[in-house]
Image 1 (tube, rainbow, N blue to C red):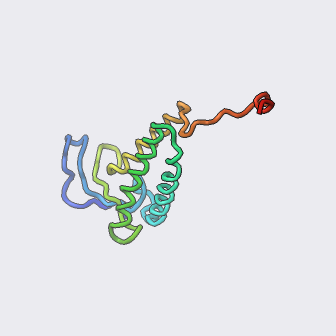
Image 2: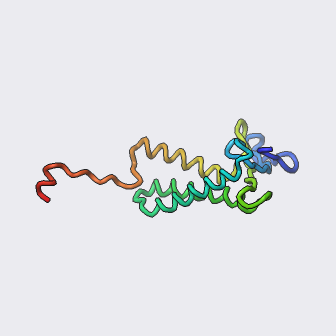
Image 3: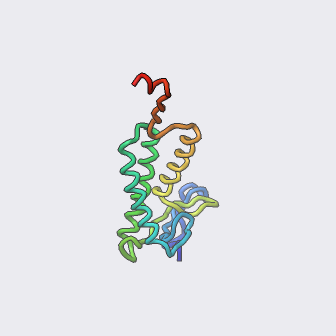
Length: 144
């Protein structure tokens, strides 16, 4: 089962607008591919390592925020997959936030989602993570 709800009825925080309901998700976002937990774990490790390597060269504070949100979200979900049953890199992620017309999620999921939105905005505004150096013109080469 991709998403397994446990316990009693959801705890209403803001009526039906915001509820807390404990669930375990063996799949990806929206409970997709519940039998691919090991793949998601390995993919998350690759993304985390790649992000850590790239973040050293960032010169943009907004892109650093995106990297931090991605790393925080990946780490949160990856820790669940590492330490929760049924075993190493195959555990289910704990989801607990429920809003109307949306799958149950957690803070790590929110972090990744916000990072994706910010990355889109930064890309649309053409804000580069690493400033692009101007290319030399033929006139510049004559003076070198």
